[in-house]
Length: 480
Image (cartoon, rainbow, N blue to C red; front, top):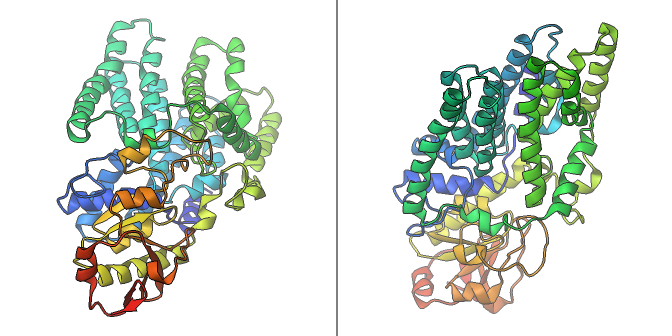
């Protein structure tokens, strides 16, 4: 069953547009421009530092980043399944891998095994931190969990939440001083070094994405809607969420895992609710899903009658296997602002971006064009290799846009879009119609390269002269 799940994750492979922002950072690093989106601009417009570094060696070998990102994601998903099996085998009594089967049957765990983002790797790291802390009994063990927690924070900034798990585990020990220091010092010292480097390199500690998505502003109604949709779809996980209620009836040894797993789940889900969740359905809830499944398995294993255990396990696994995503999430403009992201990026969309990007690169090669992109166009910018790209939909890679005040709340992470006036002030030359963002400018403000149309944002003489004579290029209604 687990092998079939991994095979299905491979079958469902895809890549999201957001992943191409990290891909461009990794490519610029390999090309010697630094860990930047645009040469000369040190802005941390990505939120997966370690994931981006892991992809860089593949780009150094001139590989397309899509394939290695998918391979690494599937491997992380498979490793999480194995880790859950190991947890089951280490437990006394009933050793049926309900948690591992639950993750195998979980559709979105298989979907986000790929996608080009760090989701599967982050889920593995978060699970490993908590599981290792449950098993830790010595200072060496807690030092290891501290290092794992630091790696989780490097994979994604919200992994810093899991830095709290090792110290919490150490506080349950009789001899608290040694384990507690071991649980804090490794991550603390490495964290100080990492933050000092960020302050030196980017000039700030928090990533630009924090400001772009207004993560400091609480948005509980939207966040609770996001979490609620997830648990409504995968209702058996509510059993795992409520598992800490059994603490009053469990011995101390039996309660340790529930305390650590339950605390990690609660803290992380509170964070998700605070920031308003995500626009991708399920992605922000997946990191604690294996922990919820472990708690669900633990409660099933403690049922007194074998027949009742099997019946309850099959019921819960069936609820996960036959879960159905709400239909509204398949529509981009639905009121929730949450979508089934994979549905909008079939393989054909990526191939179209590759073809369009390569055609634009040939037509504009050697000219210092400045291009603005909007939603679903990060893949176009990556393949076109534009010299300068302004991400104008969310401000992820632009400090000024990211820090603009919110006029109103809208779709999570897409609330700071800028228009023509701002683009002209930043000397942007073109905006191309592609993906979910078409353009239809008048002939006088139209650029056409082959079959792809864009809008002229601002005429710059040096760009116009450099493009003069390029075959197949029409600019402002004039075919040169």
